[in-house]
Image 1 (cartoon, rainbow, N blue to C red):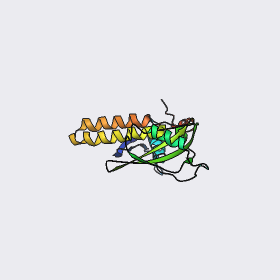
Image 2: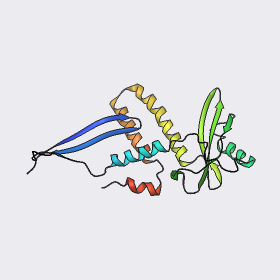
Image 3: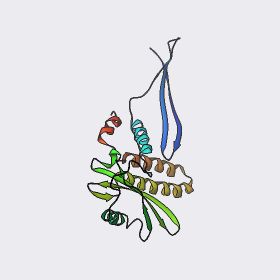
Image 4: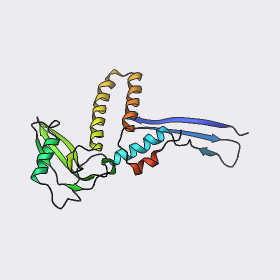
Length: 193
C-alpha cells in the first residue's frame, strides 16, 4: 500500500482571482514521485470563466469599421439607451465596429464605445447592436455589476475583518458565476459532481 501526502496551498487571492492548488504526492517508488491533480472542480470552472472575463473586458475598438458608420436614427437610439446612466452629459460616440463576443449573443452585430463627460469626470461604456437595437449588452452589464462590487469591496475592506473578506470572496464567486458564458464555451466549464 502506497502512502501519500496531501498538499493544499492557497497561492494568491485578489479581487479577480483566487488561485489554489491541490497535489497528492505518492511515495514508494524510489525513481519517481507522481503528482495527481483533482478532477475538475467548481474552482477550476471559476478560473476558466475568469480567463474568459479578462479577454472580454469592454474596451474601445476602431476596427473592423462598419461600412456605413452610423445614422442619425442610431445616434438618437444610443442617446436614449444611455439617458439614465449619463443624464445631461456630453457623449462622444466612436466608430461603429462589426462583430461582438459570443457572450453578447448571436443577434449582436456591431458595437460602439461611448465616452461621456459629466461634472468634470469621464465615463466610458460599450453599447452593442443586438436584434437591431443599441443596448447595453450582457458583457457590459456584467462589468457594471463588477464595478459596483469593487466599490462595495473597497468600503467593506475598511472594516478589516475576516467575515468581511469571507463575504467578499463568496460575493466574488457568485458574480463570476453570473458572467454570461457562451454555449460553445460553456461545454469547457462543466464541473464534475
